[in-house]
Length: 177
Ligand code: AMP
Image 1 (cartoon, rainbow, N blue to C red):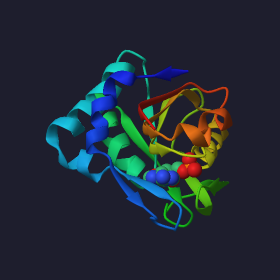
Image 2: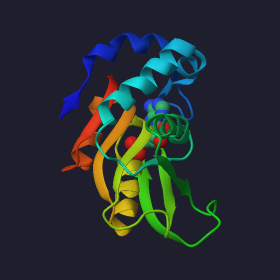
Image 3: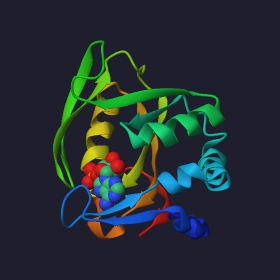
Image 4: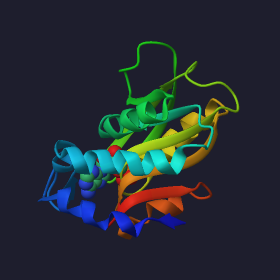
């Protein structure tokens, strides 16, 4: 387990929106963090510092807020990005995995030729809630026989115990609630 308490001050840039997108969900809105040049830069740089020198081949990021952080981190590390998208969005041949969400159910896809066997990848999304979404992304990366080096999130909602669902993979989150 690796938590990084030093990023606590970034919570100032996370807005809580009650009852979105459904009653009873407390939505953690990262748009103020994205809007602030220093906070956004700091968040991306913290990931980059952690993963520089890890010989990663690609960041695998989940639609759609995962793309925002994943693409920025990949670019800073000078490596490529592999999108994991909701069903029907990727144009070429895909693998599919089903996932259960905090608010619904979905099918995620990855292009069959997106990664070669043994490539070292970092999986990224904005928020770790129940871990259902990331679990499906892990299975997609594994179907391509990639090596999941670590799984990283901006925010982790610890009460939902998503980490357990992602065992035995290494999990890193910048900010925990
Ligand atoms: P889960 O599969 O339950 O871990 O849900 C993760 C996905 O849903 C992530 O892509 C998040 O963007 C989104 N999500 C789930 N719960 C929240 C929340 N309370 N606030 C913001 N985003 C959330």
